[in-house]
Image (cartoon, rainbow, N blue to C red):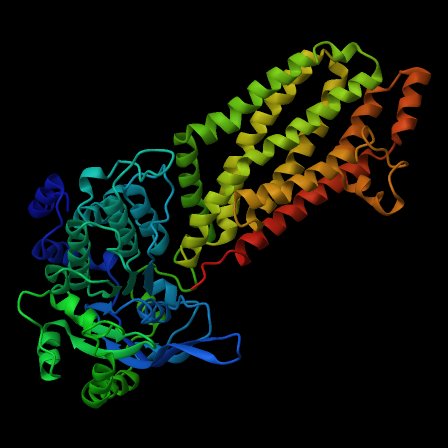
Length: 616
């Protein structure tokens, strides 16, 4: 690749690769860049939704079809015709129950292995803002394949894809978003498509990849998809809405659906669609985009509506041919998905292409890179906020280390409270990370456990440094004797880890940042109250006294105050008795808080795995 002249020229000019160049390159790299082709056969695929009256409403009437490897297929139709529904069922992304069957090379699909050979590209471009254009493509290539050992082997296919999608010139530019400026919307869409191709899938399903793009960007996207389909023998099915003539002509096959309910009106070669319409008595007028005309005649309510006519003509003329082709697809057995996977050297079976440790390695590398590039996450929330807040609050308690025990308890109460409140600032970041984590796990790139572990290895140490600095600063201002440092530091850090686990769990459960704040605040408030300083166990209602045993604030306040009260005489004992603190419970407190950390982290993992799944 490094010495391939057409490749070098097109990378330098930042333009899509030609078919000839890409074919030459794919032949030289077919073993590592493309899987065996796969056909897709579906029979009686339909979808209906239940109504409140007990009846059902048909969204897509049962339909059948067969697609061959290397075809670029367009799914077209008006809104409500079920084209996205059909795509989701073909891609095995439909989470609601539907009827019919889908086969790959004549074999029934397996939910565990199908994501290994199929890629789904949704309407949203879900990627971290501080990723560069090259990194998501390389990320998918590393996690969807069995690994590329050397730099030359690893970078060349990525550069090929970036050039094919016209992204070579912005390879090192940030994706961008609300926090940082990056590439354009059209370029972001092409990055998403390039990620799908980098997975080396045999099938690719794209839901309106040109939506919201300019005519030029839309043409570039479809041109790149056609190039990939032909060069790498990939079946690509695309939902597209009113493409311009030049774009429509790039598709091999057209599936045209009518609405209310969704019905087949045409399935066949795109090049023969115009002549078919004419044979049905509805020729395409001169100087009219055929794609626009197709939609006009299958959209109920429009002046040109002939959806019932074309649905009837389809059943009479095209459906028998299609059903014959479907039966042939059902009877003709090709490679199973497992055999397709094993055809590549070094490949492994299972839901994921790479083992857990390689998933973790890639996720950790990404997490570190994004954190180091994001000044808000690295310096702002992680370090500067705790330091500034600790300095400001600590200054207000200057010299409290030499005050009576009751005033010292006030300082400890504020210190623990500040640590609890600080952890809440990370929840919006965790929720944003969860959004693209759920998208990527739905594509079987990695497991939720690998993602949680990678985030833990970066977020927790960074937050711990900030919390430790905050404790040190406030302790220094207060002027406590050094003999109390170990007790204060240990218990404050333990409380920090409990709240960090709690807020991590809340961020995994909550729908958004606002709901996370609403869920976390009452829990934090209850723990703040049940600490012996504000409300003692003796003064609390009997049915609420159990909260004191699990309150991080209560356990920490008790242990630290007992340490401060040593040698305090009668006055110190009076304060301890008033707060209800009892000596000898430090071990129980440590065990309780450590158990809470373990349980909350486990619940966080469970919530990330089973909640907020991508619904289709």
